Length: 65
Image (cartoon, rainbow, N blue to C red; front, side):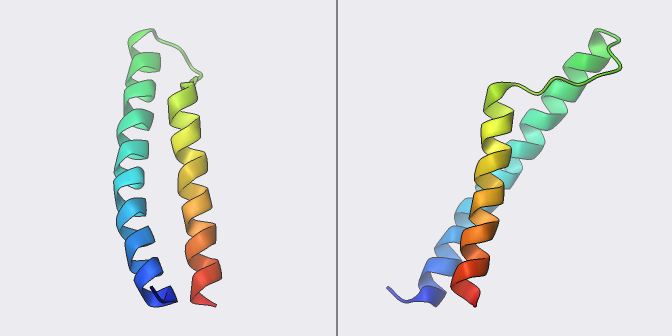
């Protein structure tokens, strides 16, 4: 498998992770609004998904160099 193939596969994974991040962020923000909280506390799962998304971006950038 060459770098182009890896990049394509990582981009597919990133698309799914990005959708999951958006879903969980919105759920956490809705929960904060429901409780009239001015501060959004993101769940540990949301934070891990955000970190995974950032890692995927880094991997894709490294492979595209």
